[in-house]
Image (cartoon, rainbow, N blue to C red):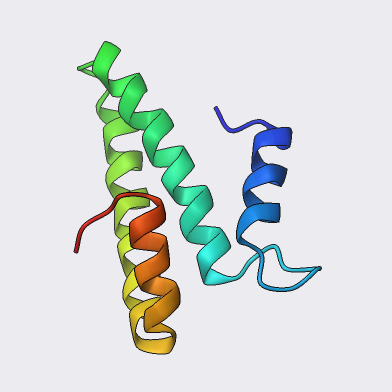
Length: 88
């Protein structure tokens, strides 16, 4: 579960300006955290198909945001891929 403190730390790390809470890079970072949490959950609960569907939806949303970032700011896209050890 992503706690308030953890979420604030993620936002502070990836924000682009002082009041930024919803830029694409922040959203990708938050989605990655939720994806890793759900992945660990599903390792112990193999038949939790509702959570699996939610995980697939989060992965799709993150992929869409990453492709948007690749078009708008390729350097930021590369930095995020490197930061989260994602490959594309």
